Amino acid sequence: MSFTTEERGNPNTSNYRVFFKNAEGKYISPFHDIPMYADEAQNIFHMVVEVPRWTNAKMEIATKDPLNPLKQDVKKGKLRYVANVFPHKGYIWNYGAIPQTWEDPGHKDGDTGCCGDNDPIDVCEIGTKVCSRGEVIKVKVLGVLAMIDEGETDWKVIAINIEDPEAKEYNNIGDVRRLKPGYLEATVDWFRRYKVPDGKPENQFAFNGEFKDKDFAIETIKTTHGFWKALVSKQTNAGGLNCKNTCISGGDSPHFCSEGDAKAVVAATCPCGNEEPIPCTVDKWFYCGKN
Image (cartoon, rainbow, N blue to C red; front, side, top):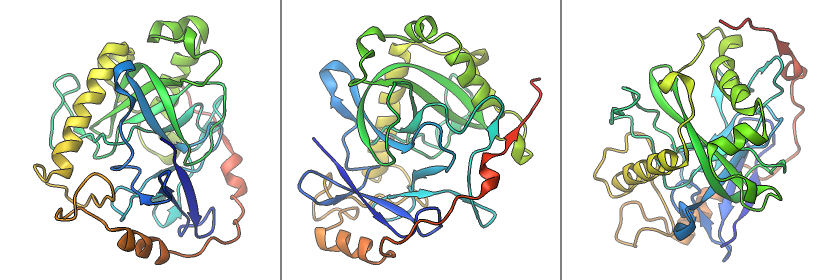
């Protein structure tokens, strides 16, 4: 199963979008149409790469837009770039999401005591390769961190690309601690402080900031997959989320998007144009004391 992307608009502007196609060239939703599992028997999952490692632009699956393309988050009318909180530069992993998952904002998690953040579950991929924006990779899950972001449960799955040359050496969260010393601690530090330069308080964590193991992580992913199933089958109120899809629902479904309608969605966006420069302020380093 392979996927390609099509860029629209001008990179580094608010009109920039990345749409997805399947192997047949049909437009799809990366939120709904890409299967969660790449290999269910081996617990191998698909991951949609939103942000390549070392970059700052906060790209994300546009859950409220038709076909859910990638776009850059906007706050207070400006494109959002994640700050460099010393010693970190941009995102310190390939960052993205597992398709066909959803952290239900109406469900209070028994472990965290908080409801979901209304997004697909997040993934930090720790392999050697710096992935490309919009790349769909197959990952082995190693563990999970339970972040509490402004009162919402925001799980951060730790995984590795199965094509990484060292992937066979990583089978659980303890292997990351042993083979990449300091990486897990840096991950907690990154998530704790990345919003501080914006004037926000440090994020908190369930389980005292400890990572849960592979089995716990997989069960958490399966739970969010169940929430997603309820979402697309209209058992749960979608709120402002767009559940249009081209592959998983039949023609009589209110969420079904025909091939013609999908092409019209893409055609309604701006053609791919010249890339705008990234503001030089994005390279600034912030020095925030640790509490």
